Length: 385
Ligand SMILES: Cc1ncc(COP(=O)(O)O)c(C=O)c1O
Image (tube, rainbow, N blue to C red):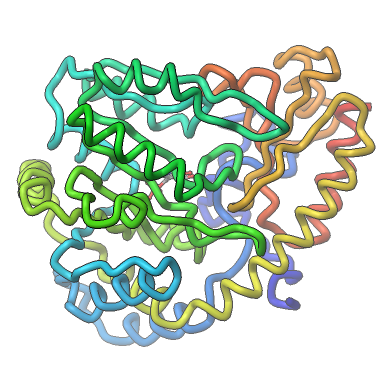
């Protein structure tokens, strides 16, 4: 666990999380617990592989070798029990670009794209910037968990071309059950809707949780599902820009590839390929230690939040992003941001960014050393005191 306790000075590395505080929050002297990356080094095997590749210049055009696809498929099988055929796998520089590509490839301008809110902000942006009609179904809160409003969902899915699912769910960390995913998949099938499942957080599971890939829940009826995944959240490699698009349907793959070709997409960054392969091949043990560490961080925040009147934590099944509900304090979103930034010097994501249902919440990133988590807790208490 020592590796995660080591403080890392990321300032001056053009880190979005650390070096863009002034641009995003208007002040530099904040503790950054906002954007979703971790203050941890990736697994040593990834660093070794990158070093080996670095020593093999030049860095000309590099195709993604079969060994990378095999590493992806082996990971999906080992980690999630999902048998992915190598020819189902396509590559992309990121999951957000993949969302945009899939929207363009599998729908037309003006078509309705449905998602569940609150949700990761770029979902809205990619739908709207591609001139599709955004439709949202508000998640219901029951016993401290988000639940799908099935009546509303079915009514809206029947008018949609695509459904964009965040699985596990950012910002709440909710893992969707096999039963829920079966039901979503069946409804999408019934209404001829393509399900785009963003599973970027699916490897970051707490000990009680199991993630079921949407395509696996659909059993052998998964031709209407496109899955987006990446090693970037799991192993802290977002800056290397390597992700995958997995589609069992040949027709959908052809459409996605045609759209990628139109955008000039040809291959991944040389180092992204090396890092992805090493992470999926050799990162499992590191990931297990990471989750033990994060679970302990979660415990500390849970205890602290339970002592702050009016503040509650939505218990996550996965990922290092905590969804905190401050509606019980009676404070407005503006008042809370003001207190966080001016009084407590703490940068958290404002819940309003996540669309309808996000108001009255903030999102806190706990993927940092225990010392920083403790400092974050101290500041959280100051903000809400
Ligand atoms: C649900 C979700 N999808 C996609 C991304 C970003 O993916 P990428 O950096 O590969 O574009 C994030 C990052 O926070 C995310 O939470």
